[in-house]
Each structure stands twice: as structure tokens, then as C-alpha cells.
Length: 137
Image 1 (cartoon, one colour):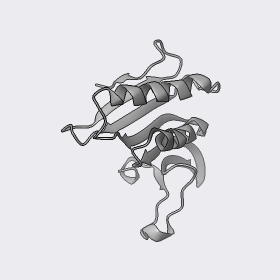
Image 2 (spheres, one colour):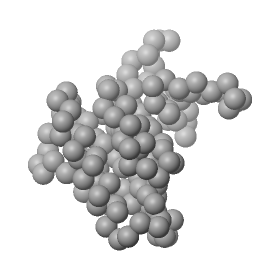
Image 3 (cartoon, one colour):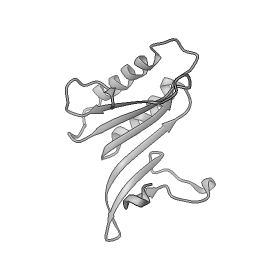
């Protein structure tokens, strides 16, 4: 998908045993005349079902200079209703403490819940009010 749109997908190797990350699980890079121009999309995926592990990976996204940041995670299916809201509040706390946001940053959360038929997608835009995640339509 990245290649079709003219991006370099990193890491791009056919042998997954030799795959190496560039801080995050994957990055779409724009190149001009054999030089990297900018990162267009950066993503982290965490399947641990633990808030602490998910937040650890999410924090990596904040360090990347990129306007589109994606975190894919799954919530515990055995938890009571409202777990998704607890996760969102934790993400918002992390973002509130970080002081180096860029005005064009968009954080997307793709939340997988095996009890639901489709995933939930949330977005947070730097510099916008309110400073909370809201469902992306």
C-alpha cells in the first residue's frame, strides 16, 4: 500500500526474521532524489492487552517528527464495559505531559475489541480544543 502511493516502507524486508525497526514498528517515508525528505506516517502496534505496555509503545510516537501517528492495540475482552474509556484517558494523560507537540500532528488510535464486529478509531489533534480523543468518522 505504501509503495503504490510512492512511499518507502521501513522496515521493508521479505524475510521477517531479519526485520529491524526504526524506533517504531513501521514508517512511511517520502524520498526526493535518493534522500529522505520526511516521514508521512509512523505506527506502533501492541498486542499485550496491558495498558502499561501499550503506553510504552505509544510514547515512541511522540518522539517522531511526523504529522500522522497511529497506535494499534487491543483491549482486554474480559474487562467490564468502559475499559475503552479508561484506555483513552491514559493516552490523554500521556499527551498532556508531553510539551513538544507540532500543530499538524494527528494521533490515531485503532482499538480492537474482539467482542465488537468492527474496530474503533479515535483521533487527537495537537492544538485543538478539546484536547481529548474523539471517534473518527
